Length: 225
Image 1: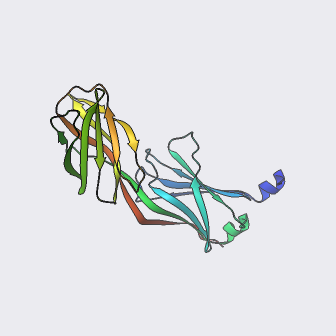
Image 2: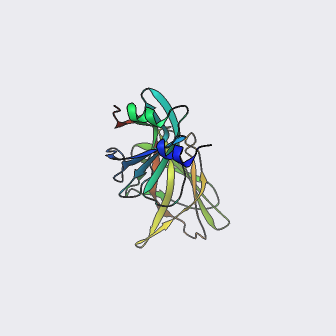
Image 3: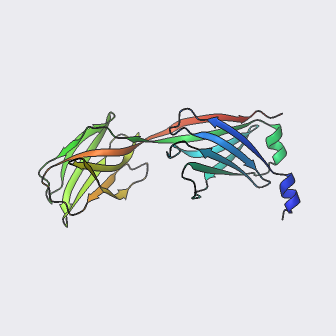
């Protein structure tokens, strides 16, 4: 058990404000907070975007600490990453260099104005192919219980799935409801359009994911003493 005085003596905060140039949204590593048990990194964004990396580490003078996203709510323009100290102490971080390492990039991108035409919509499943940014996409669509189901799948493992589709009715954008969200290893997705009564449709992609498992980001935070 730590007393309040021990906690205060072994804790410190450091404002960093280091921009991450290749991450959208004006993302910065804003602050590092060190306690006897944990290190917290706060990332801030000028515009909300999901931080595109899945795995996190701190390299403290050659010792690697594994981190995770806290999942706390609150400010949507902040991301909190937590790292357990695992034998290190505050002095270790003051005296040694600290580098933030992020791996496995899963990048969210917005679709373009290119649409895919679905024809002869009925209860019989039909398929059509298209591409998104050079990635081949196979679409399967069919009616069931007055709802239109639209499945998407790519044979390219670098494609991580269509997040959401929509169509235009005049100037209004009508979005499908995601029914099935696969894992990164299975990029199959499904949207549902309820109470659908058309025989043809020009469908568009709102956003999609690209999987880059070998992508690595390294950001020096402190140089030590």
